[in-house]
Length: 145
Image (cartoon, rainbow, N blue to C red; front, side, top):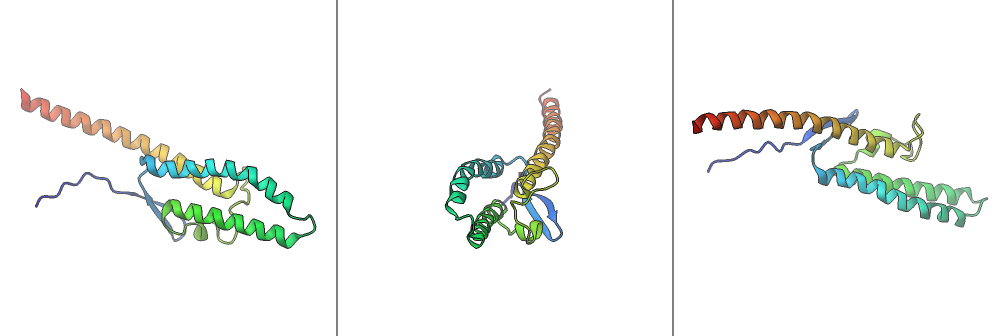
């Protein structure tokens, strides 16, 4: 039996030392997962304020427990996007809600960097696509003559 290879291999990306992920930068289903995290985060932000208001001001342990649970949920979400545990390698023991030097939560900075990389790589793949179409169009036009 003959096999047809359509070249749908996943691209390999290094997020941190020992943390390699694979995805197709033009896969809209993959990008949809990332955008859903941002949508869900907006919704969670509304309940976040209400949840904080329920914690007594002098109960630091309850506050930290709440923050730990929030961090755990986001780590599960991020790991789920890639189907591998990326958070431990990328963030270590730092909260994914800690801010980077641009003021973004670390989880957000990671996903925005991935979106930027997808945009760059998609542009390169589009250029390759145009060349391939041109090549095959020219090839088959010659055969018709």
